[in-house]
Figure 1: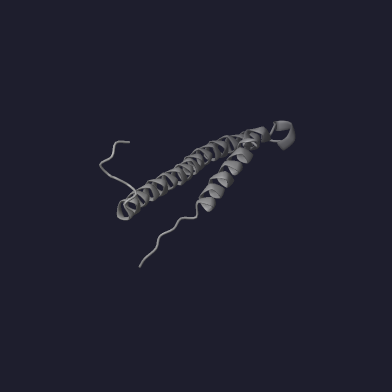
Figure 2 (figure 1 turned 90 degrees about the horizontal axis):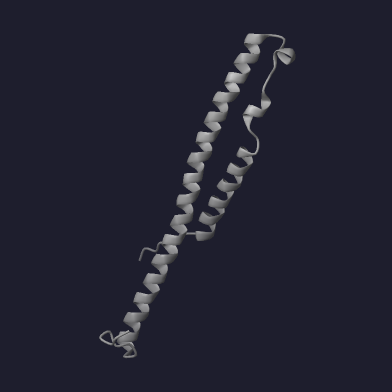
Length: 109
């Protein structure tokens, strides 16, 4: 007989870890590292570094948005597994009660 199991704690830990990483990324904006001409000694170099930082920040924001979607789906999966387990337990209890004669499937609830 094949068995199937899901480590719900691992799914929850993964979602929490992703959310923690996202929060850390968002607290350190690459745009905060703006380079001035006085610091670099050259206008084109300063512009290139700043443009790179802006583009890098967009990439970080896109990555964070995608990671947040993954974390959300992991959390929804945990809830779905818990709901399916509850439904399965209720069904088994109903069938067991019918077999033992303690549950009347025709009785009003």
